[in-house]
Image (tube, rainbow, N blue to C red; front, side, top):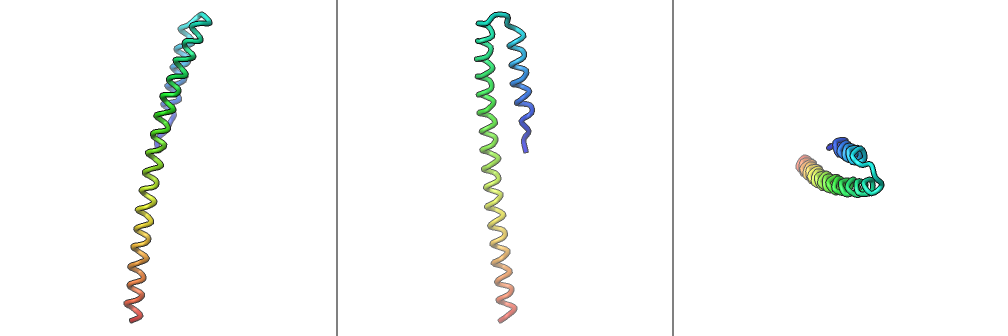
Length: 84
């Protein structure tokens, strides 16, 4: 399972770097917009990864369901063969 800690570190570094570099109210406002935009980009990446993980889980669930169904079918055939 992927970890999101590096993404959070990226946001923190971007925020601290931008705030340390400015010394005016206008600079702070601009830096806040930059950090917000970066946070949105990171959020989009996280959402995309979450969708991929969900899709993989669904695929795995389907495969497991098919395997169980196949196993039950074979067991039923074995029981039917044993009783005939």
